Image (cartoon, rainbow, N blue to C red; front, side):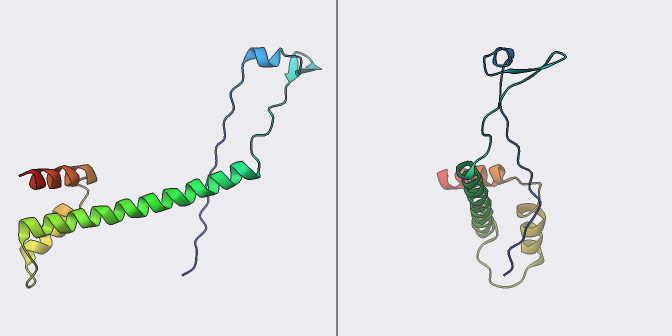
Length: 118
């Protein structure tokens, strides 16, 4: 399978105060303009950490989707029983309720917890 490359924005922030501008490291450029070094904002270590964070994020999203599918399977089996043959009622319940945006991940989880606790 081919790996896809999507455009990704990367935001890095740095906080400094007016005292930093008045420090001995500030360089007066004239006309009320000063320059101060912001230091290193990105280096190979930071870049590697960002790459790892992106990969971990993808793994978390994939795992969450897999868990949600398992929740749906358990709820479908609980409410509709084992699959024996095609039933339109079962299909509607699965597609229009369990897999729709009307029932959030959290709602599915809470429903399953109620079932387990009962």
